[in-house]
Length: 124
Image (cartoon, rainbow, N blue to C red; front, side, top):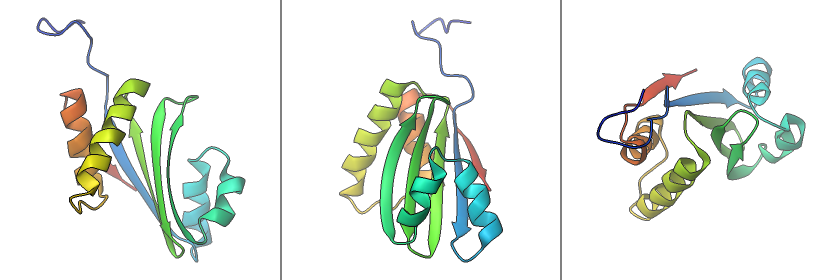
């Protein structure tokens, strides 16, 4: 279905999902790692301060991963096209200079502004 005021179809089911795990909780940490590509390569890096974003082309998801060495948060942004994900990152980086901290709500707000669509929030 095409929206009458837009030439592009809105992305179906845009969502931001946050997964959290403490490194000293093996079950929760293993569950979080299963969501990520190349989990074994990431396991050691997450034991220290770490921040990365990666586009997972196989599943068309943008992954934002943050670790302080004790706790890991992974934000999974689904329902975007690659160019939209890139625009979200640029907007986010501009806001970070204003001391905006990464949260599911703040990221979803940024995604909603880029997509001009509602965003489903999920927390695991």
